[in-house]
Length: 215
Image 1 (cartoon, rainbow, N blue to C red):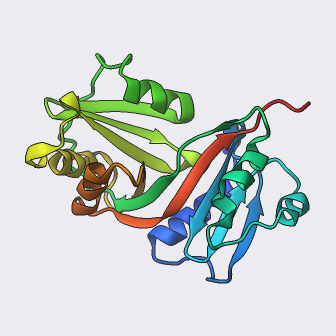
Image 2 (cartoon, rainbow, N blue to C red; image 1 turned 30 degrees about the vertical axis):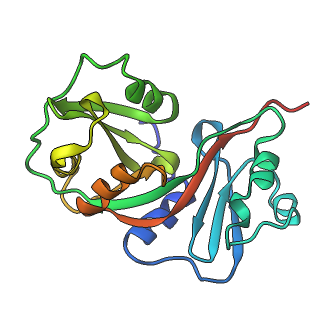
């Protein structure tokens, strides 16, 4: 039998935050090992940041990041990624609980070329696609193995409460009580409002990145 790998330690921070247990507000930075698949990230909670990287921890801390936003400053993120690395956008991290039972959204097999699905498959594992006439839902394993969902409304619209209703139905795809996370750009105010109205709560912010090749 193949042994099940231990979860990445960042997952504990995320699950604790979803339960209302946050790191100490001490301005410090915790450095963890690189994420599966070689991705790195910088996650900011209130007054404390957590970084996952393959760089030595003492070297990272010597660059002077702090838990008050400094661990997501552009110059520090470029250091983490290296000159040829890739840096994703800043996202708000939100969490809710699965509703279970309903499974109201059918699987979608016609959307493999959709930009939302392609992006999910590039950065996440175990991607499943559901949806209906309102739009698409992707369920996947995100950074540190967290359960994560995203939505894309058909036509890009957000009117008529379709985003909120689609999110509420998406939560029925997740077992009751299980934490599920979402990464939402703060500038996408309509999407952010829809997630909040559907019961998601903000935990912090994150930037995912991938280090470039060593010179």
